[in-house]
Image (cartoon, rainbow, N blue to C red; front, side, top):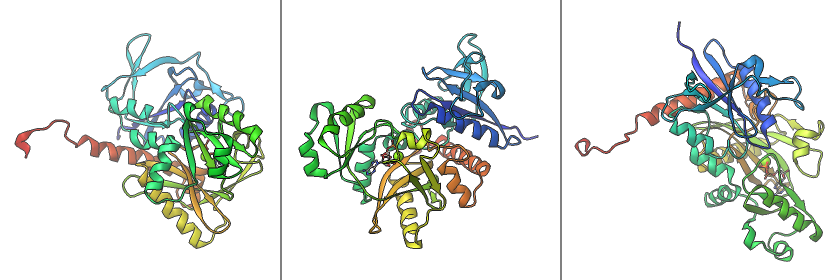
Length: 368
Ligand SMILES: Nc1ncnc2c1ncn2[C@@H]1O[C@H](COP(=O)(O)OP(=O)(O)O)[C@@H](O)[C@H]1O
Ligand SMILES: [Mg+2]
């Protein structure tokens, strides 16, 4: 019998999106082809500790998205060994308890989607799903991301990126960007720290809120339009899914609309769009993915204005991945099931790793 490939599902994380990640990991674990793969569950708790456990004991309240949490009591504290080729060391016994062949990080936001875990996995010489260090870091920092998109001629909203010592006055912002405008941390996700400012009295609070989460804050022109999202899959030749639409019943697609209010947002899949706009969105999604050095997967989010203009808002390099999340749902509507999608992502990770292993790591003059 062919040896099963051990997939390290790395989930949880020191992040505001910890619980979303638990749900995604549970869904991936349930759906993964167990004839071909052996899933190994590696959780990162809210303090950043790495834990190993078996699937039946890992999650408490796993059926309830509001109460789901890690069961840290029965878990073992572990660490990845640098250059250990997937070895997982028990921090109490110092024994190698387990090992993985490929990692599937399902972590959202800082310490997961931003290149940090990807750097660790590179040092540990483990193939992994998704963008590498550069694509992850660039995709997380909205300021650098938007400058690269602008440089590639991709339409985006006008914005200012500011540090704490260079905050403009409300009047200066209104003059440059008009009213209302958005304020958001440069490195965050799930709409955490995002505010819509419509009058002067809201400005200071919005800026303070943004700086709670990052040392750099974006102030951005408000775009009035529909919110369209498109999934991308692949390494060097990525492809785009059918686009979907998020219809939010809140002032904007806030944290509450995303996760708290059951009726906060509806997903329309596929989005009701003309063929021309669909093609435009798909082409821009692939161009954005390539421009930002992404690999594996990414969900590109857009604003569609009434006049037909399409603007890129952002990319998410590890988008929500529960079986009812937009990223897999868009692939399902495009003919790729959830289980098949997981399989393809793992294959893409292995393909990239194989190519990287062939690269020389020393310079030999005789090879010339
Ligand atoms: N410039 C903007 N114009 C209109 N709405 C915006 C703008 N920026 C953000 N929003 C609203 O806030 C939500 C979250 O902002 P986003 O930039 O996507 O950050 P996050 O990474 O937290 O998802 C968006 O989905 C949208 O509803
Ligand atoms: Mg967003």
